[in-house]
Amino acid sequence: MNNKMILMLGLFLATTVSVFAQADDISPARKQAIDSLALEKVKDLSKYISIIGSKETQFSEANRVMDRAEELFAPGAEMGVSSINSSEIAYYKVRRYFERLMALNYDRVNITWYDIQYISDLERQPDGRYVGVITVFQRFEGTSIETGMNYKDTTKKDITIYVEKKQTQIAGRTIEFWDVMLGDVRVTETSA
Image 1 (cartoon, rainbow, N blue to C red):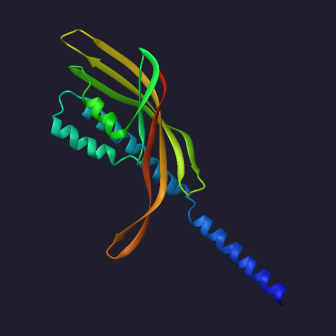
Image 2: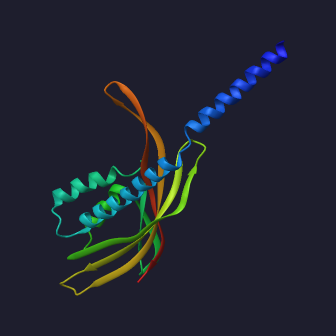
Image 3: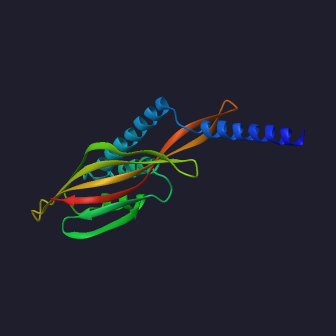
């Protein structure tokens, strides 16, 4: 009798663990929605970078946009900066990157992102989060009217995407949802 009881208990626990493990899996429909949200956040970041870098943006507006842009990122995320004049790539915390971008010594700055796409599918991590990578190409153009300096480059960047289940309270009820946060933005290639 004890062996049957232990066997039944073992089967129950194995089934329960399997059900809970599947509860955190992402359905194909949910994955499509998450992918869309991740791409939307990257497009928002592109728009924010363009506004922050523009010399026509008022200081107060640039600071407001920096706050919004920072909300897209996971804590501790860094952004890479490169130049065709150097082989080194520097990494800065997100806020510091935005401040440096706003302070660039050009009269006109134009930054555009294009060819935004997933290069790696979401993969589940041991901590329950999912991680993927989106790649973008950034075209940077800076012009200084006084010196006649004109700098242009194209940079390929890989953006780490974190997807994790979170909870919020709505009308006294706990609601679970999948959230997307941007991670490090790594420079993979820079060309003229």
